[in-house]
Image 1: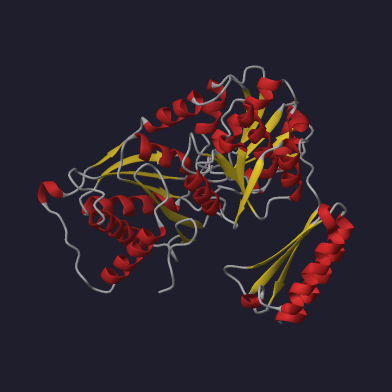
Image 2: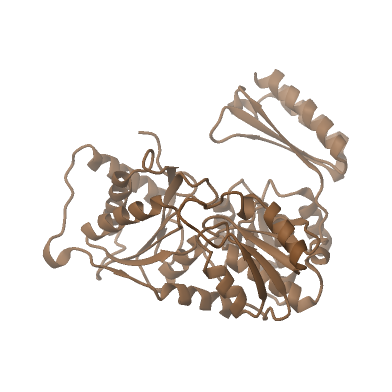
Length: 452
C-alpha cells in the first residue's frame, strides 16, 4: 500500500480510491492513535465532522461518523460547511479532533478526508504516519479493541455551527462593508450559504453565482479555478469587486471593478499593508512560497515589509508562521492564512478582509492591488528526466547562473523537481514576457540535456 496521506489529507476518486471502508477504517485508526497519544485522557472524546456538498460526501460522512462512534468518540455533525469552519469549530467547541470531507478545488468525482487536531490545527506528520500504520495493521486482520454499552460514541447534529462561524467572521472584521457591491462566486461548494450570509451581515450589497450546489456541480466551470463568470458578472453589475472561492472555501481569488484578476500575491500585498497600518502585522513580516511572483517580493521590499519564503505548499507557510509567530502568509493560488483568526487558509475571511480594506480606504481594489506589478512568469514542465539530479548537475548549475546573470535584478529563475511525477518544473520571471519565454526555453533544453 502506498502512502495514503498527502500534503492535505487523504484524497482520491470517491468509491474507487477513497471507499467507505477506507474512510471508516481511517477514522477508527485516528481515534485509537489519538487515545494512545493521551489526547482523550480524563474525558469523553468529541469530534466535529463536516463536509462539502459532493454527493459522495454523504456516504463518506456516514462512514467517518460510524467509525468514530464505534471507537467511543461522540460526534457533532456540522453538515456542509467550509474547511476553515470545521477547523474553527474544532477549536471553539474544545473538540478533540475535527474531520473534513472534501477534495477542495478538485473535480466532483474526487473526495478527501482531512483530520484536525485539538485547537483546529493540522495533525502532525508523525500522527498521520501512525494513523496510516495502525489502519494498515488492522486492515490486514488484527482485531480492534471496541467499546460496548455506554462506551460507544453518541452522534448528534450541531446546526448552531453555521451561525457560530459566521459570527466569528463578522466579529474579527476591522470595519464594515457598507456601500460596497460585491459579486460572490461560491463554486457550488461549501461556502454557498456561509459567504453570502457573512458579506450581507457585514453590510455589503451582494450578487451571487455558484450558490446552488446539487452534489454534482461543485467547481464545475466556476469558482476560483474558473474566473470568467465572475469577471463578466462584476462588469455587468458594476460591482466594486468580486470574490471567488473553491469547493471547500479555503482559498480566495478576487476580481477588481474592471474585471481584472487579483491573485493571491496581490491579496497578500494589500492585506500586509492594511495589517501593518493597524499594528497587526507582527514583525512587519509576511510569509509566502518560492513560487510567489518576483513583483510581490519587490513590492514588499519597497514598502519595508520583510518576506520569508518557504517550499511550495500552504502547510510549509503555516509551519513557518506558527514557529515564529508571524500573522500573515499565503500562496499565489489564494490560500491566505490570517493566523490570529484562523488555523488554516480561510477564503471567506480573506475576501471579507480584502473588501474591508476597500471600504475603509475608499480606494478601488484595482488601485490597492497596483502596489505590486506582476512580472511575466513562464512555467515549463520538462518530463522524462532524472529529477533527483536537479541540484547536483554542474552543467545545469552553469546554465542557471548564466540565466540569472542575463535577467539581473528584474528577473528570477526557479528549477523545482515535481513531488509526484518524473519531471522538472522550470519557472522564469522577467520584465518582458518574450524575454522570459526565451530564457525558460533555453533552460528547459539544458534540463533535457543534463538530466535526460
